[in-house]
Length: 71
Image (tube, rainbow, N blue to C red; front, side, top):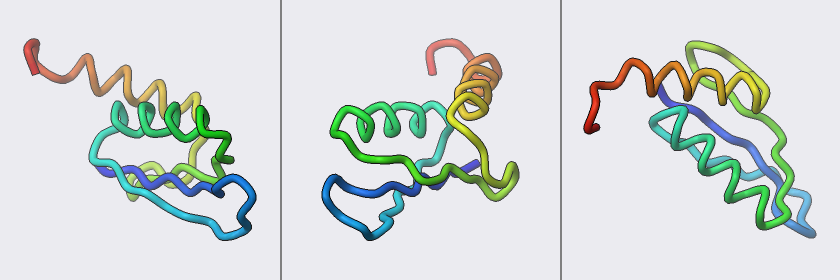
């Protein structure tokens, strides 16, 4: 399932978006965006709708548990 992250870059007003194929990659992207002082505006997926960071972390944990070892 893909995840879309909407964010605003430092000193800008436009909302940018990036898409990741997994919850785990979305969590990593959010960490990267937060380190660069960018504001997260939304996180959404086609199946779950809009969600917060904590919900995304929970989905990433569940996703990791479902994947076979070594992947």
